[in-house]
Each structure stands twice: as structure tokens, then as C-alpha cells.
Length: 202
Image 1 (cartoon, rainbow, N blue to C red):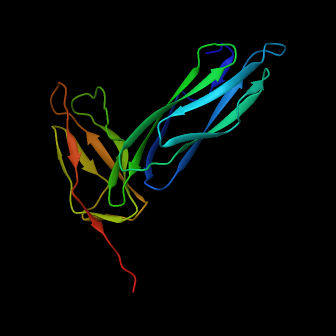
Image 2: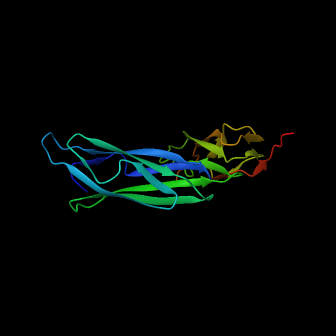
Image 3: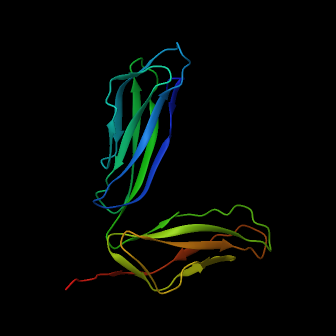
């Protein structure tokens, strides 16, 4: 990678995207050399992962000192599963390419996605507590949640009244609190059975 090149992100995480839909994130590459410094010629932009693509500035192009280019990276999931890929920015002078990791999750019609998928509370003193927020997102169908169950000493769930309904494409916030009663490490898990709701128009 060229020493003067700055890439706005080394990772682009698209999160949950409905199957059949798309989400685009912009990546900015900049020649940070001082005035009078060398230009940087981008000869290729390569993308791996069938569900990812790039558009915008088309190689080959040269960035003079202080100039930037914007690359639009698109995620279009074709199936309800996690997807990963990568993008490499190749230079004309054989410098090592700049790499960007790509990830996203395809969300099916009747699926309910949770974000984040894991929570780490770190060190919490006995007798105190720490909370983290998350969201449940429905696919392209309404989803009903009858109840929730959790395990693990010191963990609790709040912010949702059951039974609950999540409208298609919408999100429902929740909070997980960790309040340890004894010292030592603790792990837990939250689960919620869901039922797709199909609404017919007369």
C-alpha cells in the first residue's frame, strides 16, 4: 500500500439487508501527500464476493496530492445468510494493494435478525450493573414474538413487552443488563421464538 494513500475504512460492514434489496456504502481514497508530492495512480479495483460490487471512480485514474476519489460499494444479498468478500485497490507502480474487508447478512422474508449478535460486558463489579442496547429487525413479513428466554447468572432482558410484533422491515429495541452477584466470568444467551404473520388484503 502506498504510504501517502488514506482509505476511509478498512472494513465495510453492511449489517442486515433484505434479500432482493440493496445497501450502498461509500469508500473514500485520498492522496495525503503534501503539495508537490507524487501522484498516485490507481490501476484496478477488484471486488470478491458475488453479492458485492463497486462503482464510481473508474480505473485507471490518478490522484494528485490532496485529491480524493469516492468508490460506491454495493451489497445485494441473494440468499438469507451471512456473506463476506473483499476489495483490493491496485496501484500502477506495483506497491502492495490496499485491502478492504466486506461483510453483510441477507435477511429472509420471515426472519428476525438481532444486532449485535454478541455483547461483551467486560469487567463489572459485583453489586453494580452494565447495560447494552440491541435491536430486532424483521424481514419483509411481519413477525410475532410470543416470549423470550435467557440464561446465565446475572443477565436480564428489558425494553420489550411480550407478546410483541415487529412490522416488516422495522426494528424493535431491547436492552440486556449484566448485574453480577458473584465474582468470576459469566456467559449467557437470549432466545425468542418467532412466528411469521401474513396479512391478506380483501
